Amino acid sequence: MRDILQITEPCIKWGMGKNTSVVQTELAGIYIAAKRDHPKRYNHHNLHRQQTGDTNPEQTPYHIRVIKIPPFWPNDPEIWFLQVENQFTLANITSGATKFNYIVANLETAYISEVRDIIVSPPATERYVKLKSELIKRLSASQQQKIKRLLEHEELGDRRPSEFLRHLQSLAGTTVPDNIVRSLWLGRLPSSTQAILATQATASLDAVAELADTISEAIAPRTPISETSNALESTIGKLTAKLAEMKIQLASKCSSTNKHIPSQPQQLKRQTIS
Image (cartoon, rainbow, N blue to C red; front, top):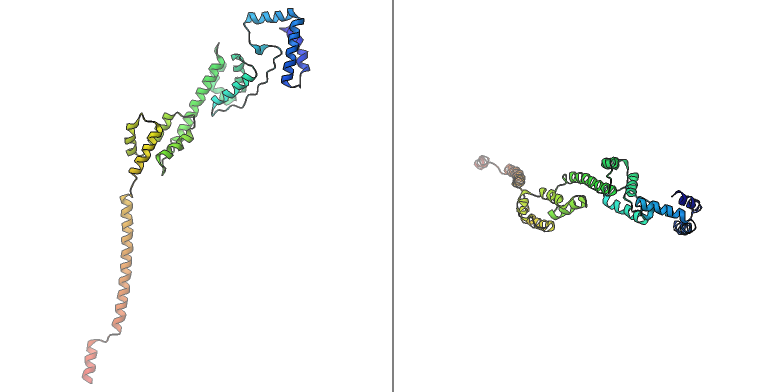
């Protein structure tokens, strides 16, 4: 292996700064020439690979790997792993151990702690698969709890049940399972509506939301008796005040009229004198 690297090392230095694909192509030619011109050295390297069971083409001396790992995305680790695995494919990386090392090297400290046990004591086999599955599972569970706590503070208000459901689904995204969203949504509906919808346990969520809208329209709350009573008292009070005002005005007019009408004794006295 050292002999092969001694042959290719000057060539790699020579290729520094050149286009990667060009360098790979030219180094491939050099490697083939080395195989032809130095068969003993090549056979020694090939024998080593056979003895160790290493058939991974990524270990070929002339292969140059360029990996660009995107920043970790805790809100959707599954998508992040898909991005990383695309990079592995482009770089022809198939070794689980290599993938494991790349992930560990690029995870931020806050998320390393989530899978500390796996990093400290990695499994003998399938370590990358284990790291990936556990990181997705643990972060998703943590995110679910955060969103669930957020949803628990949401109220129906004056929205239709279907509108409120869409609002909860928008907040939950793809992190919270539908059954949790359904449970939270039903818990915010009026108790009378919940009692009716309890018979629709096997119906789809969309169908239940449509039924909830129908129920909501059918049993729309009327004006409360207390509000009606208050309104009536206010009206009576206004009428009473108006009547009192009219009574005062009428009394005032009567008083003014009486001043202009002479009293009966005075009229009789005048007639006697005459």
